Length: 127
Image (cartoon, rainbow, N blue to C red; front, side, top):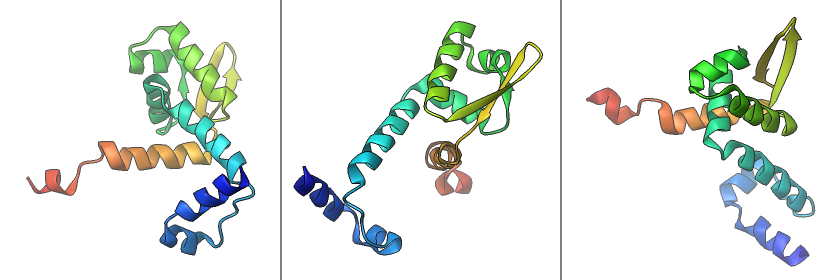
């Protein structure tokens, strides 16, 4: 297993390794597991859309239902998974629950995904 992890460390681009210093292959397995769990949480279209909507500010479950055109049970199920992964947090005000992004990693990832897939491209701007 150590040989595999060291091999994975060698696969990292030299420019990334240069920017980040030496590669810590001893802890790579744990980090890979954490990254895999994070990506699995993002890998569901409904959860991804919830995070996208929360990137603009906190929302109630009812607001998310309307934005997603989804049933309350489905939205609540996806929010529960996102809470479990530590990607969203909530606060209660009376009977209303407000959700927001809890993770800087989630915010950075959503911003990057927006830039990669949603933002107008240079080609589109020139047309």
